Image (tube, rainbow, N blue to C red):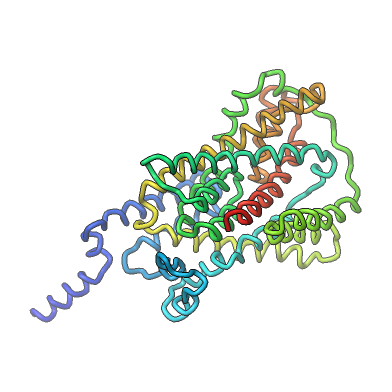
Length: 406
């Protein structure tokens, strides 16, 4: 009988339940609760469910004591060690769990470019080609990235929290409202912050319809919101084929570190527009896109363990991420107002908010806000120009940050 009792005690002492009772064990319960909240948002509220659902479940798995699904210490070199000499692959291959294997795609920068490939197959650059001026609105919205970098550096000069230059750059990229880009930059510059930045980036992308409208209304007048824009010209097939090729060459020569993201985006778009590789286009935009999205979200969710996620850094990352997103939206709208004045009222400033690269949600928000003031106003295609320009802009901004701090 005593042997049976000892066996039960041994089983319990080695279980996850016993670890919850250890010092700091309650933090894991908090993280499991956070994961459940994110799953609620994904399932019930349908906020970015394709990303938030597997990410939230990965968060729960990573915070079940003893699960061993991921070991972030394998990927982060000890203080003072040369990262290039750290035996990451040996540790992962011999002792790693499922999360470690999947996370290699993030660490090696494989998943985000493949996501961009899929996005390219679903993107129509026609509105941007038809109205090249919208590229300026997409560029203006990226000011949120660089403004937030400065904010993070100023914050580091206070006793509240300390962010390195690389960490500040990784946090700032949240302002681009592009999850794959944020993950790509963070994995290169500050992998220790990956979980916090990814959760913040995708949460704000999901909340675009909530965050943007108050900013748009505060910065524009009723008359400006009601401006009806002229119909865009029809773009020829030749223009749509030449654009991704030319864009890849020009951007990659100017910012070589952006080549992989911009190149994959434009390759996907070229496959869509040329019309001769339908099977490749469908695979990249459907099966491959879905598989990579699942791997990416699950592996990123697994990085959010309680001992690295629940700290003051995460709080400030969430706050700075919101500031980046709001500042990017505001910069786009303000530049839209400038273009409205320059063109004598031919540009509705609302389309400037679509310069953040949350495609196509940000463009739909511009459309909805325009119709609130004028039911006969159709801004969707006009807003898609800055919206797809924002995707290019965020990739360029990522290349600049990696070039400077990588």
